[in-house]
Amino acid sequence: MSEKSMKALFVNPPVYDFSAFDLWSKPYGFLFIIDLFIKNGWDVFFFDFMDREHKFYEKNRKDRKFGCGNYYFKIVDKPHIYKDVPRRYKRFGLPDEFFIEFIEKIGRVDFIFLTCGMTYWYPGVEEVINLCRKFMNVPIVLGGAYATFCPEHAKNTGADIIFEGGDIEEFVIQFNNSFGQRFFLPENLEPHWDVYDKISYLVVRTSKGCPFSCYYCGVKKIEKKYLLRNIDHVVREINWNVRKFNIRDIAFYDDALLCNFENHLEKILNDVNKTVGTLNYHTPNGIHPRYINKYSAEFLKQSGFRTIRLSVESLDRKRQKESDFKVNFLDFENAMKNLVDAGYSKEEIGVYILAGLPEQTIENVIDTIKILKQFPCKIKVAEYSPIPGTRDYEIARKLYPFLPIEEPLFQNNSIFPIWNFKDKWEKIDYMKQIARE
Ligand code: SF4
Figure: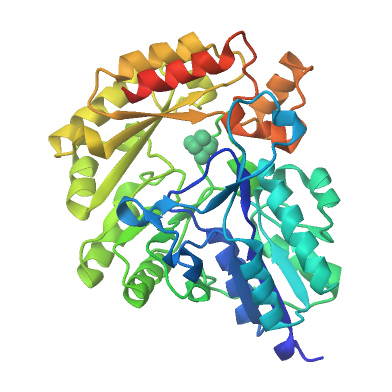
């Protein structure tokens, strides 16, 4: 069989969780792998269970602002490990019948590739693998966060190869070695958005990795080094897809978007805005207050940033050390002043704080919330998830040996896995209510 006729199916599985919302959520890294296969001459098929532009949503669509919206879901039985969680457990995403219809139409492929964005979403992976096995017995390769952080556990899903990390060069080596292929790594890989017929927003990374090393974060296992992407490549990627899909909203997935701002993001957006006009930009991953000075705040406002999310995590000194001192109170105060002076309102500024860390008390979180409430911002409580391989995960294992944190389902942030105190859920609801009020 010649390489030209090789076929690969790429699948983004459904999500099993207590909550899920399309907040500019796309399998961005997966789209680069797809581009790798296309540039190596393969025929590629793609099915995204989380695609809200699918025809199914013509009757089931609930949109919010800036291209975001609700996923279709079904309530499903809770796994035993969640028996005490007073929340409904759901399967989010397209019903299986659409996937079955799709694989019947495309026929047999040579390989199947799956991704999975969270360790505790693996039931979706198992579901897709079981479905695929009914139709064809071909090698299945699993990558993404679940495969990276829980590779041993992932072997039980039935996947043939578990690919850890986000390094495409390593992926090529492993794929070639495992399956006797002769893939080459093209010079400019880009996310292959053409696998979608329609999208309502674009997501972009102008850099890889992160320059910080927070105790609770697993980014270094996915991208070891912090690297800025080539400016021309990023500009071309944005301009091309904005025109092709008639997009007005772009969410940045960068972990340190404003780092090296004047030599990178500023240049990119000046170029983009000149070519395709001003767009709406969003920062769902949070930006670091220390980089928001008067100049960058004004630039953000004028260039079209509509959703500003600041990563504060905690104002407690011990916690700041765990966040690699990426923010302190003075940085935050200055950032807020500069954003307000630049014209941002409370509705546009959200501040992330982390809750549920090892040794963190709920009272400590509430104290941080109360301080932040004095500022014109919305407080967003981000729940801590113990990610295998991180420093906080090891601390949690030692401190709470009775908790089953090795089980990926137990790593679900929605259950505040580390917190284990009397009246836990009443207190958590109270904390969330104070943050919202
Ligand atoms: S700044 Fe964000 S992405 Fe970077 S290490 Fe800390 S938590 Fe992770």
